[in-house]
Image 1 (spheres, rainbow, N blue to C red):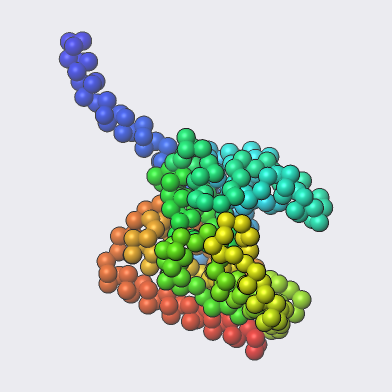
Image 2 (cartoon, one colour):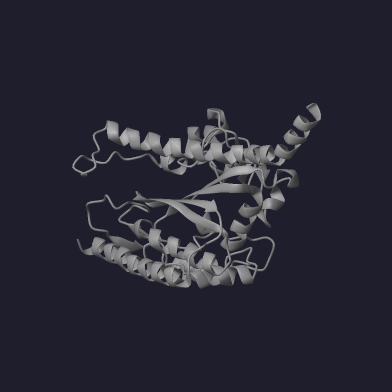
Length: 345
């Protein structure tokens, strides 16, 4: 009888192993749902009803960024600088990747005074090349989540950036992004970034911004009165003012060296609205360029909107993709119409 019981147990081992492997993924899913439920409860407690008659409780930007993340997760935060979203000091299991060490960042942002105390030790210093090259190979595929606030618009080759995250994250890894909405910041006059621009940057293996993008970033930099950022909640008409002359923009572009290992010139290379960013990922997924799907979005508040991405392949038919592309393109026109109306209100 003992022999038969042993054989029966042995037959169940593969099923038990599968359950163990799935356990962590299930716990993460449950925790993410609990976070969303907590947000809904907070809204309900403040009087939000199904008919929409009561005011909606504004969820903080931190709540939005952390909505798919919990404290059991191993987090990679990119470019946390002086404002980490999931600080180690608050008990998060976070690892910080930045372009400089903690001491270098404190020197860079010394003009901010006491805020430099928020700069945490940098675990991985990224000076160039693929992001994963800055992280020990033994840690590849071990991060449950990545946070990147106001980062993607600076990346010379965003497709390669997401390929790196694909290697660094677990199979069900999540990416939480805070992204400037070009309608409500100094990118106001800039054109929206479309899919071919990212593909071109990927195919030329960009590690520096092109002179065209550096010129564009400088030549069309504007302020709304004296403000570089504002938001849809603003009640006054936008009063745009260009801040740089063409000769200074040209000089900045000519002084850059896109093909040199040094001499990096930073810029907002890419400009988005919520719908344009969603279109990018729909089209890149359809073309097999990235394996991330948009899981959740939060509409623009202040100068930024929020996107939650989850690893996974697009599974829509060609007709579904075409219909969704057209709907998003129409939504982009509506977003730009709202921007135009803000000048004339």
